[in-house]
Image 1 (tube, rainbow, N blue to C red):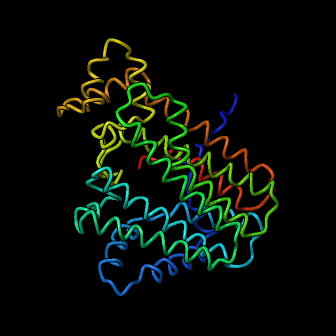
Image 2: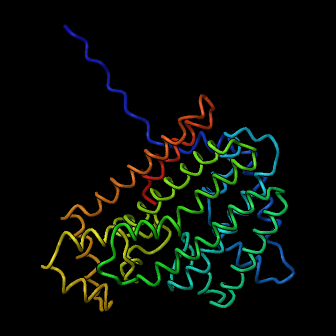
Image 3: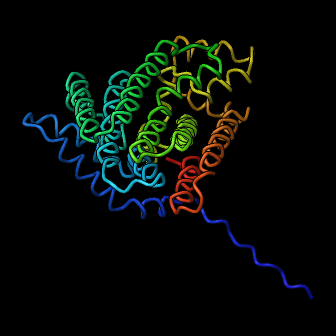
Amino acid sequence: MAVATPVVAERPPSLDALLGLARSDMAAVDELIRRHMDSPVPVIPALADHLIAGSAKRLRPLLTIAAARIAGARDEACLKLAAAVEFIHTATLLHDDVVDSSQLRRGRVAAHLIWGAPSSVLVGDFLFARAFELMVGAGSMPALEILARASRVIAEGEVLQLTRAHDLDLSQDVYLEIIKAKTAELFAAAAESGAVSAGASPERCRSLRKYGQDLGIAFQLVDDALDYSGDAGALGKNPGDDFREGKATLPLLLVMARTGASERDFWVRTVDRREQTDADFERTRELMRQTGALQATLDLARTYAESAKVALADFGASPWRPALEDLADVAVARTA
């Protein structure tokens, strides 16, 4: 009698290996962040800490550290770059929440609702300035150039998204251009600047930039899907914010295209004119499920995550490689 081969359950993707490898480095980055948030103006550290303290994983600075270490870095220049990356990211969140009138961020009341929009914008400016001080302190002009360019590209992406909001005819190509700029660029720059600071070859710097960019695109695609499928407790923000703002993300673009003329009036009212009732969001979610728009968005995210992992092919048997591959898997498997 044949003996059945036991089925071994595939382990869920985890950040444990990456967090373990980067533990001491990230502790040093956290210390740099706390030190550079300080200011004699009390509202600055209070407001900055309100948002920064809510970031548990610090994925972008973690990516900077991992890219530097897999590229052979032995010094601490990458620590300052990682802290700078976190400040750039936090500054953009503060500005975005004002622009979008967001109510929640990382499970907390948005800073602009506590301290006001002017303070939020100005503290965001303070964090940008601190980021550039840290970049200069890292002593790598190429890394400084990469992160400075990323700051400009992110701003361009946000403005492009703002000018194309409520656009029922936005193409998928333009949508991808927007998320490459506003989200994936900082992932790409975080990885590339880490590699550059380690003195990696141009080929390896390009590979790590490619990894970061594809990871960032996958991350944003999942974010956009979760806005229609997640819940506030897990997300740390209100689901449906993109819909209420009329933001043309991929799930919405796909469901509008797939429902065609039959729902055109509904989309003109809810997205273009933003004349919405409480039931409209639930109707949109149901249409996304029926048309497969959410699944198609997640499938595309997985395609980019796989592409990110392929970009690591030249990094051999380094323990950082499987840890970074896990990060790509986590990005698309997450529910928050």
